[in-house]
Length: 125
Picture 1 (tube, rainbow, N blue to C red):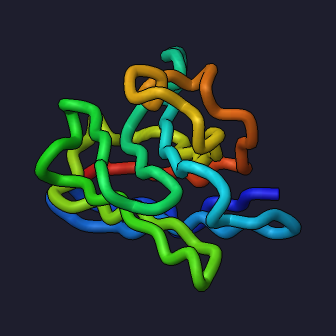
Picture 2 (cartoon, rainbow, N blue to C red):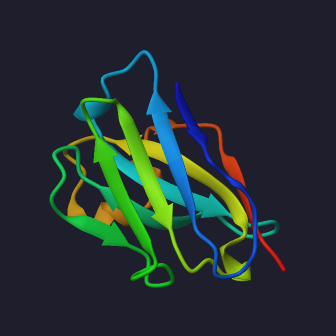
Picture 3 (cartoon, helix red, strand yellow):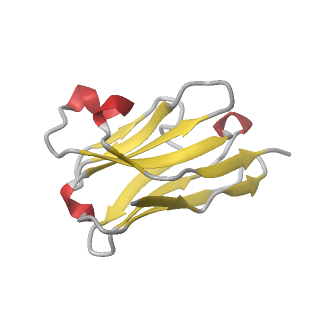
């Protein structure tokens, strides 16, 4: 199971750090991705990081504001979100994709085979 946590209600410009913990699985065997889904919208890619770290992948809408990271020793992934905007309001999900996922597919939800429960992030004044 994957479990995302750390969401909440914040004001525009605030920061939040989401965490993703894996239980019963070897966290370090998979690439880590974050996705979000706002009401009435499709699930969209936010950020991803390969199992060994290295290349980072970001949606243009969050580039420069969000940072994805992982601590394989702790079996935990993170999404640091700074300068939050109302349009960042969504349920955020973490997910795993196989190590073999090609670069272009890292942005696609269809590449991710294990999904966690989401955490709600609401940005509002």
